[in-house]
Image 1 (cartoon, rainbow, N blue to C red):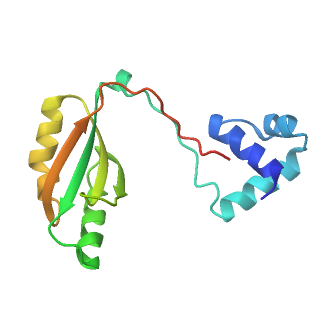
Image 2: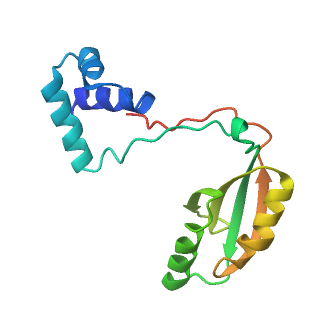
Length: 150
């Protein structure tokens, strides 16, 4: 990957709907070389797809919770079962395996505190091998970036 590829990635991270022509004009290449570079990066799984960013507030999703989860078991089977199960909870936007006192950190977005309580009672505590939960609630978002530093 060269500097031109990185410029293309930066542009696409800012606006996935940019035309090939606009990308080409920004990096100084014509349509065909831009298309070939993007195609190669998609095949190499550098580009994993294009997504729309949605406005959480406009959708009434006002609460962001960071749930630290401790599991009762730590064998490979337990970890795989837990990780598969969180895929079935749409309110969980991110899941990270962690070092330290807790095994996983989950980013959960919901409408209200009552909604979060319901998710905990109906879904989180029933995840495979769940043992303990510690939650931090975000007061407000001060930075969000979906782009990687390329």
